[in-house]
Length: 206
Image (cartoon, rainbow, N blue to C red; front, top):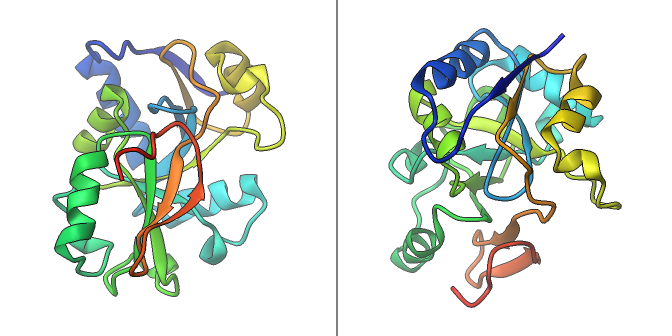
């Protein structure tokens, strides 16, 4: 059975955040709030946890398109090839925010992602998510629990999420109702930015 804990975004309780981080460090899976939909996440350095998420999503780990949720842009070079000034300015302008940016993957990617030419980077504008990643000390791998075909109530109500995911994950955070619009995905891996999916983030920023 998963643990179900309440955390308030306005002032995340450090003790509760620490509890979440400990679960991640043990290889646990969490469902946590972002600035868009609730996400399913694990520690990027834990291969067994990564495999569990891939299994839940029904994909092969090396082919999975998971997002790397970061606290800020300071460790970007660990996961992404050197980017030019104009790309960096876009990132600085948009983040933290409801965007996923596709960027060229670095050679220093964790071994399970070595073959990936690109990675999706997220810095969500949500204090709980950012504090978890900050305390963990490295990104979490994340995928939304948003159902692409159907806007279902369980994707926004933490209690319904808990009922559905209780036996699949180790901890569910109740941060109140989530959104049901996913992030805007923008591919910055080529010369011209390409919109892959229009979601919550405004395109006027570009």
